[in-house]
Image (cartoon, rainbow, N blue to C red):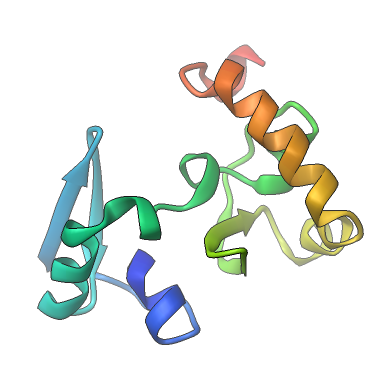
Length: 116
């Protein structure tokens, strides 16, 4: 999915292999060359929190693959969740889960989900 689209279009949009950029070994795809250029000018603005893993999971000390259709932008940062049910739990204490997720991410960033 195009990470810029969440911000510019207000919805998830599938990217295209014709427009791609690599950051820290991860390939991101974009719906247009304009989105690719916006991303390349400021990747940190568009990168999903926690490497795209579920924000609720990180707050709970786990790495769960997230659904790109289940998302929210909080204070200018893109957060993804595992599914709608998990997102509802996350939304009950977004600041608390972000605080825990931020603390856990520094320790968990380079670990495999299966190692946690």
